Amino acid sequence: MSIKQTAGKILLSLYVVQLDNPTKLEQTSVVFMATPNSKLDTSEWLKSILHSINDNDVILYNAFNYLLEKHLIAKKNNRELMGGLVLLGLHLTATGIDVIEGVEQGEEPQKIVKSLFNFNFTSKVTVDSLVKAEVGNIVGIGAAASGKIGL
Image 1 (spheres, rainbow, N blue to C red):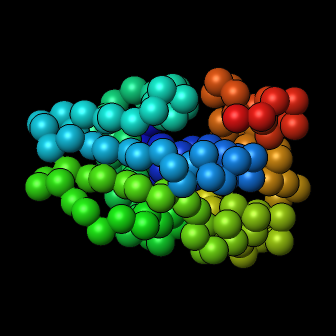
Image 2 (tube, rainbow, N blue to C red):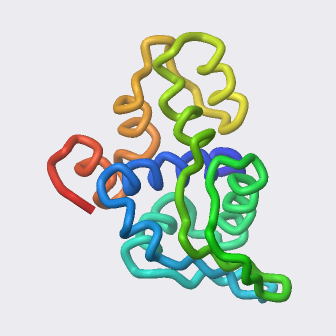
């Protein structure tokens, strides 16, 4: 899976978590250690979600950087590891929310999502159908998106 596809699935997963429990997301740290393999260190619930998307920590590291550089997610910390990445107070930005929820606004916003993440969907896509199609198989995400469980 590409960096862009991984980033899209991460963004959708974080969107579901932020909708369900924003403080849980903001209180969770995501750390990529400065090693040749950019080892991921985070809480078990988030690690499970991220490794369900892609079990390659290097791809996950690059996907988080992609989302940060596109201003789709943000962090509240200013602390950095030498050669690593520390994310504290992680949350979707207004732009990130606009991108996801824009899929229901017609062809032009849908082109943006397709371009950003290499997703393939029909013009009748909804946020719920996109979440279910792209991350519905991830532990807890599909059920949380349908309202059956809370994260």
